[in-house]
Structures are given as structure tokens and as C-alpha cells.
Length: 623
Ligand code: FAD
Image 1: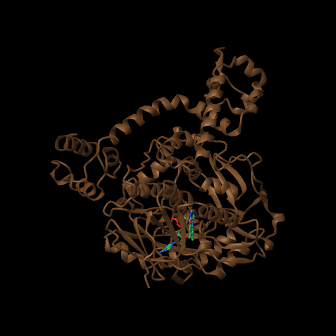
Image 2: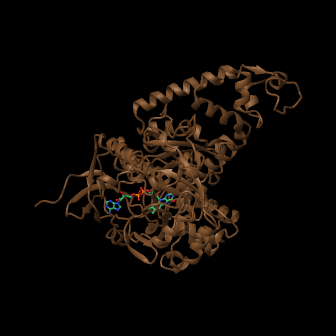
Image 3: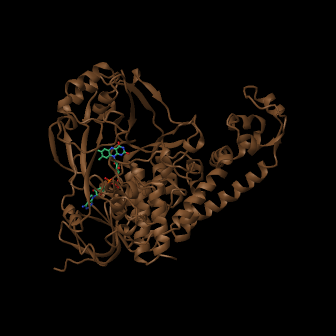
């Protein structure tokens, strides 16, 4: 039997969030693409919380959307509850978040991928990649089939040597009830990729029918929701309410008494988990003064009663989890559908990757998602899009798609990973971006869509919508530039506002640039603004408020671009740089930064070290 199958330009291994975006991006750029994943039904699975977006993560979703990606658009199709986070803070750091119906998300993601012409979906476990470091590689599946290809994108998530822990039980698995991927480690070791272990956890799942909702505080969906995608115009599904309850001293005591049964505290699972998303066991140890912790009870689907109790990830034995739950208001008689657990997995040190997510030492090998040390659907999806596009560009011998730190959170994340690595699961926060005032959710398409369009990532329909939006927004700005109000007029209609008394008339944009003048004030003095669509209002608010700061940021961005243009050749002999300390010498030789900007962000880099490097590069490798 001839077990060699059709050739593909790109093969994506894994159908999680990174894999789905990677497959779409590669296929969209015209590469003949296959997505091989273990099971049809786990395409686009939300492994942990049934929500997309949030602080920092919402920015990533909008950026992916601006580049033609799927997570925002499909997230909105499956959304059953919306909430804008940081509503009271400045528009640059507000986060769009939606609760997602798991079943619909999978269904729409699968249907979308199926509809892409040059994308084939295959269901198997990939057990080896033959000739991984050659130009033509062969993907081998557990059923003995072989698929030759030019580029491979690995997106194995929590499955690479995955091991699940509940109390003192532990077994090989990528997620609870799902087989781990164990053979691929050998393939990666054969090319000397440095692998480490990380872990993450999830809470028990509850039967909503057994919860006493009457005792709990409801949290309804936003009345005027902000959507995940620029393309979404309206709410698409029936909306559900979330509820809030709290742990208490009795619940904490139960965990205290049984801490020795938790895999982390018994020493059974010792790899680092996300610090900013602590398990319940970690919460009681790290914040002993806290008498209670908030729990959001979030519906997982429109089609069943499963509830996700957000905030109480834990991995003590199931019976202790049950005792813990029953101490909580509303959960006294709760039925636990699945226990919480911890999963530990292999990840690849991302400092071995370039900014296009290709491996520095192996041509045509790309990595995206949790395998690069991140956590979260949005982080995975963003990397998937970049890796997918770059795999196709690699096959077509075209220049890579790179996003820098000034262009988007995607650039910040990839740069952080490739220069600093990940000692714990990396997740996005707005505080990671030094140019965050110019990187709001609302201007993501302005920042990234033209760049994505230039290489073919955008559909004609999306391009047309962007053109229309840009035109409408430009006209709006021109109009508002000519609408003036005096402080007197404003004070009369908005007595709550404190204004300077210089008596000077200012136009709408100038007023909005003042921190205490809000959109609500504008609506009172200029009702015409009500006719403007929400998405333009949000953008206007951010653009006007930050305009005074953006000028300063432009200078910093210019400096960054200048540093990025000084390319460090791959063959630089760092040992020949006279005066460079051993530590920097070792780090630079290992990390091989691609340009001066990247070298400047290496941990421990000093201004003197950077100057030595810069003069060496300029002298030895004049352009
Ligand atoms: P995944 O979504 O894990 O998808 C990997 C895919 O690859 C799967 O479909 C798998 O079947 C497939 N696959 C793997 N190996 C092979 C192979 N050899 N052959 C074929 N197919 C293969 N995120 C948060 O933001 N916050 C959290 O608190 C959080 N907690 C989590 C808790 C748990 C228990 C788990 C499992 C995940 C948690 N996550 C959390 C992480 C989130 O689920 C992931 O970050 C995200 O799903 C990663 O996406 P990915 O595409 O990289 O991988």
C-alpha cells in the first residue's frame, strides 16, 4: 500500500485556537494547506473558561480581527453575554469580553474552516515529522499515513507530553479525557530544541440545575455591548445572565486542611503555572488576609446547564472539591459535573524563534500558541495568524510578515516571547505595551488592516467595509473640527463638570481631549452625535483623549523604528566584541537578536553593552 498522501505547502498540527487561525491565514494567502488535529469535535475547543477577550486579550482579539482572523467574528456569533471591562478607565485600556457558547463556537469555527477551498481538514495524531530539518518534510500520523509538505506549524497546546493531575492521581492527557501527544517530543529533541515544562489549571464544572440562583447577585449582559469584531453589528444569540457568589472562611479552611493533597503542594506537579491567574490553593496561601474571593458563575452553553465557576481553579481530590463547593452560598446542594484539575505540558523555549515565529535553526518549522509558553485563547490565536501567514509566505519565497511593538499587542507579545522567553505561562496585559495609548482596541483596524491587506490576508468584503468606515470616520472628524462650544454653554447644560474659566471656545475634539469631559457631556450639548455609530464613537473618544500624548509617543516610535532598522547579521561573532561582559556575550550568542531594538530588550542588556554591539556591527558589517 502506498501510504504517501498528497503534498501540501503548509501543514498545521493541532486544531486549537492557534491552529485554526494558522490554517485560515495560510490558506487565505493561497498556500495549499492541511490542518491535522486529533478529533473533528475538538476544533476550536475552549479548554478552560467559556469566554473570549478581557483586559489586554480583547486588544489581541481586535488586532486578529483587523488582520482577517476568526476569533472575534466567530466569538460574536457564539456570544451569550457581553461585558466591557475597565469601563471607568481610559478607552485605551478597556477590554471587550464576551461569554461564549462552547458548542456554537466549535460549530461555527468548524463550518468556517470547512468552507475554505484550499484547506483540508484531517483527523489523526501526528507522531513524527520525518526530515524535519530538510526543505521537504514528511508528517507521519498514528495510522501510518505520510504527508509531504514544505512548511509545518506546530500548535500542540497543552497536549505535548501533557499530564493531568487531580489530588494524588496523575495520568497522561492533554486535557481531561483527551489523549496526550507524546511521540513528538522525540522529533523536537532530535533537532535540539530546548523544551521545558509549564502548567495550568481549571475549576470544577457545575450543574446549573442544582444551584440556588435566588441567593445570588445577578450580573446581566451589557445593554449596549461592545463587540469582539469590527464586523459585528448586532447581538446574534439569546443572552444569558452570569451570577456572583463568594468563598468564605469555611471554604478556605477546607483547602487549608487538605493542602497536602494538592499536586502542587505535595510536590507532585512542580512546574510554574500562571501567577496572575492563581489556583484557589494558591489564593489562600498568597492572600491569607482575604476573607473571601469572588466567584463568577458563567454559563457554558445555550444547550446544556453546565456552569463554569470562574475564579476557583483547583486540583485537590474530587471529594475535597465537593466539600469546598458545598460551603459556598448558592452551591450548598451543587452537583459537580467534572472536577477541576491541573495539566502540565512541554513547551518550547520561544527564544529559539524569530519574529515571524519560525524556528531559528530549522527552516520551514513554525510554532504558535501554548507550545511557545503562552496561556489563553487570544494569545494562541494571534500567534497562529502570524505563523500561518509566514508559513505561506515562506513557501512562496516572500518576505516575512512582522509586527513590531509600536504596531500592536501582537508585536509586543511576540517580541517579549522571542527576547525574554517564558518562565511562567505568558498572558497579555495592557501594561506590557509601552505604546499602549496609541494601541487601543478601537483603532486596531487602522493600525493593522492595511498591512494585512497588502499581503492578501483580507477578504474583499472586509476591505470594502474598512474603506467605508475610514471614509465615514474621516468625514466625522472634519465635521467635529468645525463645531465649537464655549465653556459657558457647556457649564449650562452640564453643571457637574469643572472647566477652566479662560472663556475660550473649543471644538468638539479639543473638549474631548480633556479628561473630565466625557461622551455623556458631549451628548448633552451636541445631540447630533447620537446619530454616529458606536464603533466610531469609541474610536473618537480614544483618539481625542490621547491626541496630546500621541505626539510624544511618535518620537519614541520613531526611535524604535530606527533601532529596528539596524540589522544584526546572523554570523556576528560576539566574542570578538572587545569589552562586552561574558554574561552579555553568552546571552547574545544564544539569543541571536535580529536587530538593535531586540538586543536592547534582552534581560541584563546595559547601555554600554548596546553601544559596543552597535559600533561593532557598524564597523564590521557596513551596509
Ligand atoms: P489548544 O487549544 O490546547 O489546542 C491544541 C490542539 O492540538 C488540540 O486540538 C489537540 O487535539 C491538537 N493536538 C495536539 N497534539 C497533536 C498531535 N500530535 N497531532 C494532532 N493534533 C494534536 N487559558 C487562559 O487564558 N486562562 C486559563 O486560566 C486557562 N486555564 C487552562 C486550564 C486548562 C486545564 C487547560 C487545558 C487550558 C487552560 N487555558 C487557559 C489555556 C487555553 O486553553 C490555551 O491557552 C489555548 O487553548 C491554547 O491554544 P492552542 O491552540 O495553543 O492549543
